Length: 373
Image (cartoon, rainbow, N blue to C red; front, side, top):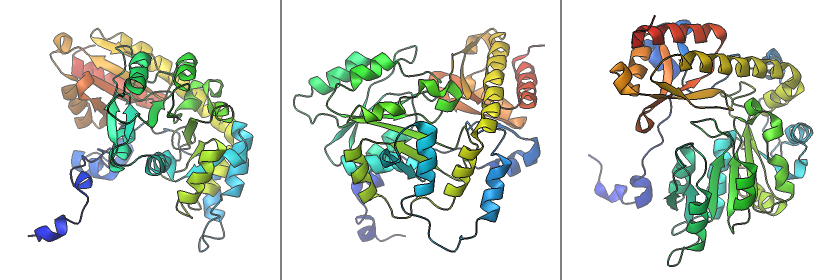
């Protein structure tokens, strides 16, 4: 029994915080389902099925200084990123995944009484990290087609009569879970508001870098753009991300971050950037497979497949058609060793794009589950 005096030492808002629900570990699921890891079709976490380029493994294996602390300024990685993004190295800050940067942004900008705008359905870490910083989260749901409700966001700023004006607005482009891109006109309109706009481009390589707004950071003092190597480069297990920041804010983040926040995994990111032309071939395969899977899923009456520019598809289930809910379909697929992500409030499944063989296995299992031939 814990002495109550110790529990009072924890901040109340932390004790009451609802934890973020991550994906169940792959190895744990494998044992629980009784399927060997090699037989599981893992389409639930938007990972890259092709993994990293072989040069990444070689760079990590050959790295000679694992006993030495990494460069706290990550000069080599930032130089490679500047070449990749056309954003000056001085505006770039690497992080231990984009998640670390989301947390860091919240910690240096908001505190008790401050407000952050979140636009669900979207990535859950925005509201989680804002709550962790003791900020008030204003939920402004997206429209039925997942577009932003720009007018309501503006109202939240201009009609905050008795409450503090929100400081942060988090947006994802492509958005998770639907895969839709942010309308540049909407972003331009939102950047006129007196708050920081954070655009998370975790999946932008699947949409095409011509849709990135990273370069806008050089023109807007209130814009932040985040990226990651987890998806397009297949480095989810190494946790390498980065952000493009206006100078004034980037300087503050450098002061606040942990000195050695990014490990020697930075060498893997540099190797991936060196081989980006070959990695683009995998991106093309994933985009082609995304369209093939979308076409196949649309043949199932009762499934609505939303347009996506990312490496996943959001599929809404009509229970009246199948006599099965999205949750029941998700569980039936899991029992067959196929993992997809459930979004129960939307009656939907989010399906990561896998290899052609994984797509075939999924479609066969889905047809069997839904009673289709």
